[in-house]
Length: 620
Image (tube, rainbow, N blue to C red; front, side):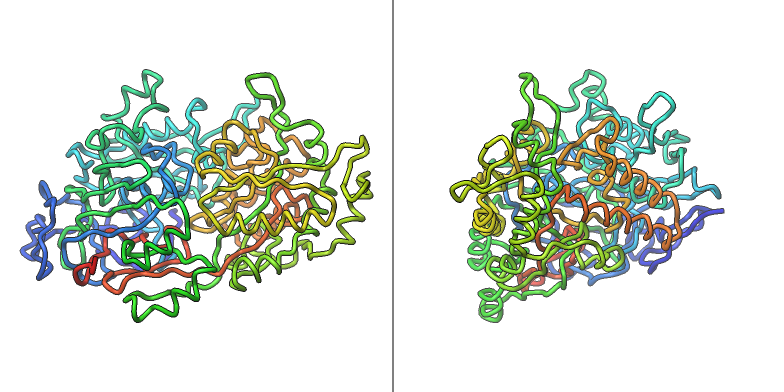
């Protein structure tokens, strides 16, 4: 008996006896010969580069959106260089924006308009009655951009890579299913049944397992199997390697990269989607990601017509809104964002390769005391941050989830309104004392620490300045340490050489708690206050682990909500990350963009990039 995902069908139907999400084997051109003729569907434009080879027999026909026109380029921006072109190692925003959904695709994908999963490289799947066996079927005839077939063995290879403990990645956290009798992590077993079929056997039910499978951005074994066998997988697909050596499965492939300047993607000539008239996608010849390290510079470059679309910072909203007509663009209000900002102290008890502890033991003692963290939370004027930093376009936040996540947000968890008296009382209870206007611990050490954030983000730096002033009222000395984003990520993931960090969470897609295993599980790589725990260090972390596994093991929403509410209550009580604010979400896009359908879920500007096109020539 198969479970079924409901949702609007936007693809032609196919009867395979599978759990079909709407995928189809479709003929291509109007004559039904399966060879969709590039350029015929639209009156203007010839795709350069053109398409190659015959359209795959299992091609997906996309029935939503306008029929577009071929040609031109889309120019977006990223706040720093990507860290890699290896999609299985990617875990930062610039890299994800360039690669996911553009260069590499997955078995299934999330449709941001319908907010349902739908087919991608796989045409469907089936689930056993006990919810422990998932069988996936690939589309017939689809290939990598180099012409080699995309096979079930590629999925098996990619899964083997991400579950290899020597390969650092966050996707693996989604597949953890507890431990065996020896204390070893359990993962579902993948078996290749034939060239197009593979099967997972689970140890326990996971209500979103098909979504977990969709998180694997599959890479070709024929290109990278040898490097993996030789132990070199962490060193491949680097930024300085030849783009032509990196086969793509998405609508574009990498053409070139110039550090600090741009990443250029060019049409994948063997892409496997067609529009509703049967003509091959994508419409655009190129997608360019300009490296713009500062959000103020991004704002200026959009006004100067150098960028086609941007996510609008709260401080830039008024200026852009006034210039809509003159600038030939539109500012779109997407409602409350699912993104959040947080302040996090380093609770890591481990030592580095030099034998020194990652965190000064004196500071570690402060940070570990929940009364200290609660005092800091009470001392932060979140309303002031919303008012002064975000121009009033945001809300104070005390929960892991933003109120924009209407399904899972719980307004009844503990909150920490601005209250310096409560903050001082908590510090006194924890043994801190004031001397000459400075806060000291019981041993007489002055309370002084640094907070790191990414230098490209003026909003975060402004938040830190407010927090620094707020904590100074308690006698704490806070030092700001802005650094390039990739350095901040490296400090958090590898060096662990930080006292505290201010960063933000984007929403998982779909925005479901089962997609936050990398953060919420004590073993997770995104459990950044104290990651990769072999066993939970703190009792409340064990309780969160148990509740998250219970949440993912049932399809009954009321039961899932009960377990998630418990996690949110623990989070609000223990404050592993002090949640700060959640912004309202706005984007801006040029009037010449066709099929521009921005979404509050990532990637906001380009989730349907294969359908986007230019309605007229760019003015610049």
